[in-house]
Length: 84
Image (cartoon, rainbow, N blue to C red; front, side, top):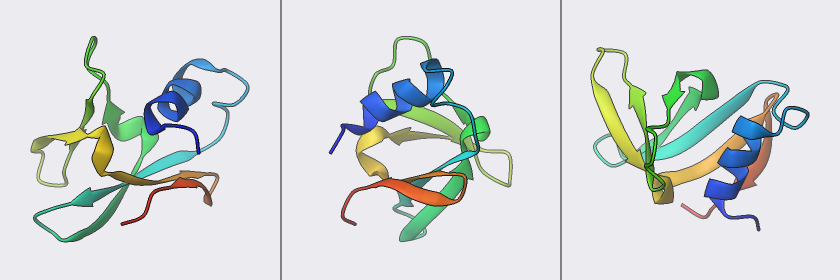
């Protein structure tokens, strides 16, 4: 299985592969379940190779480590997953 950071880079930088609608599912420790967010709502800080940021419905920013990513979808189809 491809490492998640490599897949995220491919989505971001490979123009052909990056076409489509992507979603990231990550484990939320406070909720105790998987939260799925559109890739467009994910922010990658320059130089940070270990996490991304996402804004919750209340407008609060959260830093999510890559190791908490459990699923990635392309056009609604699961293309990558890690055991929960």
